[in-house]
Image (cartoon, rainbow, N blue to C red; front, side, top):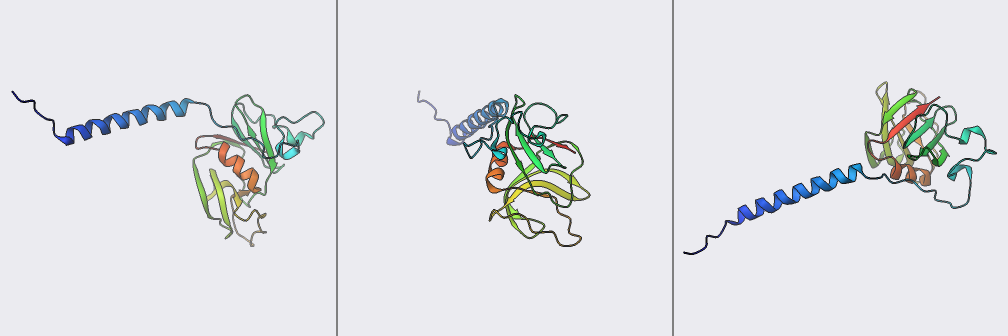
Length: 187
């Protein structure tokens, strides 16, 4: 009695199902694993690359009280400053930003979408766009200009939600602010 040979489509179907199962299991493990922490670009201590603000630094570089706990991005409207805060509540990086004309309301948000590059509502080519809020039909997102410049003054009546930053800060926020990351906006 000769052995029957299975058709090739059965082998391909079985291998594909096994691969999909393995990728799914790895995705679950990755989602539950540790998140990357942005490291300062410059090893010299400074206000923009401070790992933990010291007592002699002004209060504006300390993570604001009432900004939550755990791993998060904190954006202070009045200070025009962002903090990248790790799971142990330590500020890993802080830097100033140039806000758009439309501010998000104070509260807690989640990074919902990201884009590597596009043209901003002010016509400037931007990169590392991290969207987290919308207000009055305007998307609010962190980004930087491709050429590293500060944003031009907006045209009269132009509503922009881009929160621009220097390129090195944008690279750090891009690495830190993955989809699902908490963003806390404080006054």
